[in-house]
Length: 109
Image (spheres, rainbow, N blue to C red):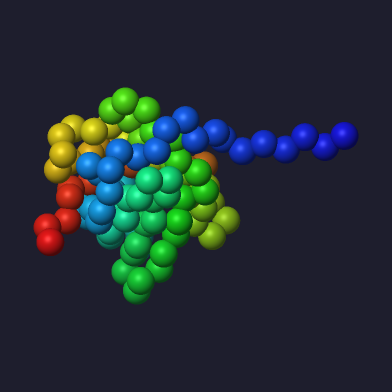
Protein backbone atom coordinates (compact mmCIF):
# COMPACT_ATOMS: atom_id res chain seq x y z
CA UNK A 1 0.00 0.00 0.00
CA UNK A 2 1.34 3.42 -0.97
CA UNK A 3 0.33 6.35 1.19
CA UNK A 4 0.99 9.83 -0.07
CA UNK A 5 0.22 13.16 1.51
CA UNK A 6 1.05 16.82 1.17
CA UNK A 7 1.07 19.52 3.82
CA UNK A 8 -2.41 20.65 4.68
CA UNK A 9 -3.50 24.22 4.14
CA UNK A 10 -4.88 25.19 7.52
CA UNK A 11 -6.01 28.65 6.44
CA UNK A 12 -5.70 30.89 3.45
CA UNK A 13 -3.64 34.06 3.31
CA UNK A 14 -5.76 36.98 4.51
CA UNK A 15 -7.35 39.13 1.80
CA UNK A 16 -5.68 42.18 3.34
CA UNK A 17 -2.28 40.73 2.34
CA UNK A 18 -3.12 39.80 -1.25
CA UNK A 19 -1.11 41.63 -3.89
CA UNK A 20 2.46 42.25 -4.93
CA UNK A 21 5.31 42.69 -2.45
CA UNK A 22 8.98 43.45 -3.08
CA UNK A 23 11.36 41.22 -1.18
CA UNK A 24 14.98 41.42 -0.12
CA UNK A 25 16.97 38.32 0.89
CA UNK A 26 20.57 39.53 1.24
CA UNK A 27 22.22 36.16 1.89
CA UNK A 28 20.37 34.21 -0.81
CA UNK A 29 22.28 32.79 -3.78
CA UNK A 30 23.17 35.23 -6.55
CA UNK A 31 20.19 36.07 -8.76
CA UNK A 32 17.64 35.48 -6.01
CA UNK A 33 18.41 38.22 -3.50
CA UNK A 34 15.50 40.43 -4.52
CA UNK A 35 12.35 40.43 -6.61
CA UNK A 36 8.57 40.48 -6.31
CA UNK A 37 6.31 38.04 -4.46
CA UNK A 38 2.67 37.85 -5.50
CA UNK A 39 0.47 36.74 -2.57
CA UNK A 40 -2.95 35.20 -3.21
CA UNK A 41 -5.30 33.16 -1.03
CA UNK A 42 -3.52 29.83 -1.44
CA UNK A 43 -0.31 30.55 -3.33
CA UNK A 44 2.78 32.75 -3.28
CA UNK A 45 4.63 33.26 -6.57
CA UNK A 46 8.22 34.44 -6.41
CA UNK A 47 9.29 36.51 -9.44
CA UNK A 48 12.96 37.23 -10.11
CA UNK A 49 14.96 39.18 -12.68
CA UNK A 50 14.23 38.06 -16.21
CA UNK A 51 10.64 37.25 -15.19
CA UNK A 52 11.52 33.81 -13.78
CA UNK A 53 8.42 32.72 -11.82
CA UNK A 54 8.27 30.08 -9.09
CA UNK A 55 4.85 29.34 -7.53
CA UNK A 56 4.67 27.87 -4.04
CA UNK A 57 4.22 24.12 -3.68
CA UNK A 58 2.00 24.71 -0.63
CA UNK A 59 1.01 27.50 1.78
CA UNK A 60 0.03 27.43 5.43
CA UNK A 61 -1.30 30.61 7.04
CA UNK A 62 -2.28 30.96 10.67
CA UNK A 63 -2.67 34.06 12.84
CA UNK A 64 0.29 36.33 12.12
CA UNK A 65 2.33 33.65 10.29
CA UNK A 66 2.69 32.53 6.69
CA UNK A 67 4.78 29.45 5.87
CA UNK A 68 5.26 28.19 2.34
CA UNK A 69 7.62 26.11 0.28
CA UNK A 70 8.79 26.76 -3.26
CA UNK A 71 10.86 24.58 -5.59
CA UNK A 72 13.66 26.44 -7.34
CA UNK A 73 14.93 24.02 -9.96
CA UNK A 74 16.21 21.13 -7.77
CA UNK A 75 16.15 22.97 -4.43
CA UNK A 76 13.22 23.34 -2.07
CA UNK A 77 13.13 26.56 -0.04
CA UNK A 78 10.89 27.00 3.00
CA UNK A 79 9.81 30.55 3.84
CA UNK A 80 8.63 31.41 7.35
CA UNK A 81 7.14 34.89 7.62
CA UNK A 82 5.57 36.97 10.38
CA UNK A 83 3.21 39.84 9.68
CA UNK A 84 4.82 42.98 11.08
CA UNK A 85 2.07 45.32 9.87
CA UNK A 86 -0.07 45.78 6.74
CA UNK A 87 2.99 47.01 4.80
CA UNK A 88 5.78 44.73 6.06
CA UNK A 89 6.49 41.03 6.54
CA UNK A 90 9.71 39.56 7.91
CA UNK A 91 11.25 36.18 8.46
CA UNK A 92 13.66 33.76 6.88
CA UNK A 93 14.15 31.47 3.91
CA UNK A 94 15.83 28.11 4.55
CA UNK A 95 17.20 25.64 2.00
CA UNK A 96 19.45 22.58 2.23
CA UNK A 97 22.73 24.50 2.24
CA UNK A 98 21.82 27.75 3.95
CA UNK A 99 19.37 30.36 5.07
CA UNK A 100 18.82 34.10 4.81
CA UNK A 101 16.71 36.70 6.53
CA UNK A 102 14.01 37.97 4.20
CA UNK A 103 11.85 41.08 4.27
CA UNK A 104 8.73 41.86 2.24
CA UNK A 105 7.41 45.37 1.64
CA UNK A 106 4.04 46.01 0.04
CA UNK A 107 4.61 47.21 -3.53
CA UNK A 108 3.30 50.69 -4.12
CA UNK A 109 0.72 50.90 -6.89
